Length: 120
Image 1 (cartoon, rainbow, N blue to C red):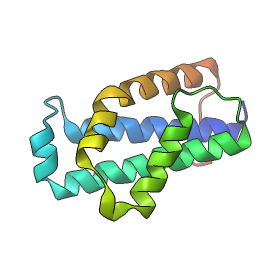
Image 2 (tube, rainbow, N blue to C red):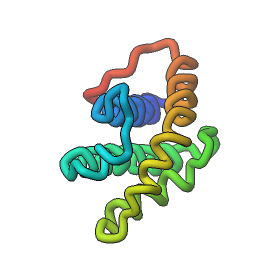
Image 3 (spheres, helix red, strand yellow):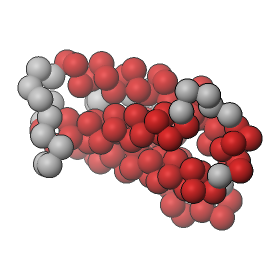
Image 4 (cartoon, rainbow, N blue to C red):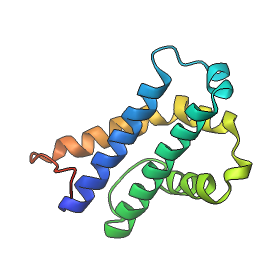
């Protein structure tokens, strides 16, 4: 795996970690709905995840990540359809799919023994 792909994987991992950090241990959908700044921060992290996944896919489409195309599509929806974002769908992705993505990204990063330089 080339260094640029490892960097994108690292960026995805950092964005996922940030989302979980923003939400805290007590993940509450109503608190999420009531906090515009939190929603915007989470949406930005999804933009990063989707863009990094898109770049990975362009460099090496054989990298296996579940729901890769849906991740890229979500990024496009958040950026281009910002006025039509469904908070319930975003929340569902956080609860149902983000833990799996985190696990897959950590596995891919663990396969590489060299540390990733986040400045790449």
